[in-house]
Image (cartoon, rainbow, N blue to C red; front, side, top):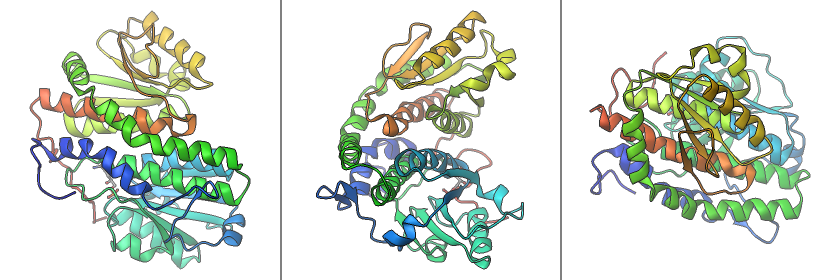
Length: 364
Ligand code: AGP
């Protein structure tokens, strides 16, 4: 992959389109079928050390923070290590308790984001072990961390991150699988996740082939002044990232909420002029999510669902291919990148350089 636009009108479109190859690249050479695990050469954490980890704390900003939220869920699901993500920008200012049994993971596309770098430096000063999940090889965060996983998304030029988000989540799936297989993830589950990972590039290509339909949907929603994005558990970080993408590139106001929190306040906003994008995976929470759609419909809210099967209560559903439940967030996010892109295009925005934003925020 290069800096050449390769026939695309924007880098954002180019980078969204590159995702099948980018995911293929992050997997390449890392899967070990013999032991149903993955090898992460630069991790610098041996099996004994990995088994001693009691908690994982993931730190990043913006899209990288959202990828970290999904990463924390993957680590809890596959490795059964308590994990959570926090914006690095908040963490560094709150004099955090640095725990020797916690493994810290700094996430960054550029590897230069000052808030993340400052968090890493503070952690190192306090003796913590910090890994990086970073795209740019040799960047400041890659150099300051003790080891880590390169995301291999290739160069990302558009200010708005797309392919790096996807590759970062896949990198977390690899890390979670690796840690899981050192701890108590079964061979069968290891095989199942590996098979799911291998399916991703073709499934992403399948989603990208529906771009024409998503473009039409973007036309339907582009005139909204404000949009609600909801998801539950695995769907929630997907909803957050999709709402950030839409805000950044189209300047439409967007709120992201856990679907479970709707009734605790944001339901008051629902009316015909406030459409909702609902992330509705086919998982054990499907019925709960359907109930949330009913609540929205009862208030005459329009609904665009992203789901594994058409949703009766939704005005429109973008159907995405099903993978292993743990990996579903990776695919659910992709049509919403295209939705943000086509909405911005319909509104004539400066897609690769949204106002007020810089690709990497290297200052305080
Ligand atoms: C992504 O669309 C954003 N422009 C922004 O939130 C970005 O993810 C954030 O600034 C962190 O950047 P990094 O991944 O390079 O550290």
